[in-house]
Image 1 (cartoon, helix red, strand yellow):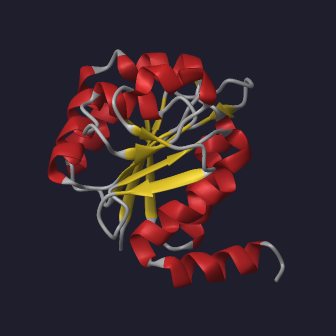
Image 2 (spheres, one colour; image 1 turned 120 degrees about the vertical axis):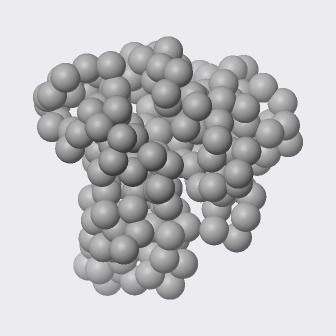
Amino acid sequence: MKRALVLLAPGFEELEAIAPIDLLRRAEVHVVTASVGGRNPIVGRNRIRVMADLDLQEALDEWGDDWDLVIVPGGAKGVEVLLGDERVLRLVSARLTAGRPVAAICAGPTVLARAGLPAGTAVTSHPSVREAMGSVDYREDPVVVSGAVSGAVITSRGPGTAFAFGLACVASLHGPAVADALAQSVCGG
């Protein structure tokens, strides 16, 4: 079974985390949510309380970097917490260096930039953080998949693109046919 790690810090953007978690679990991915910089429940940007499965350190102690995908939701305050956590930056940096899949949405791609996102990588983000992205191939598409066939770097614009972002995460782990079938099943088609 594929395994994904979703980082939840106080102030995270709920839709950007929950939509991908839901879609990945529907696709039978073992999703682990890890709290960073706060104890359960983790309070999101819109004051929705979410119980993380584990603290980040517990997740790292149990699985290290044995994740098929690591997801960084946005939310300005949550991203500030993630940017200040060396464990997060080391994890993301190691994955970028190895070409292992990472996904980030809204302000979350700034974590990838700080962790050493290679220059010229095609990405998107919330427009408010575009300047913080550095020397990338910046796009304004709702979702941008860059790198290896499996989607080594998946980025997205914001809450309104969370569903498409989640489907891109599913596609990176199980292929586009599974993501398309999942989209049809949840859209009633």
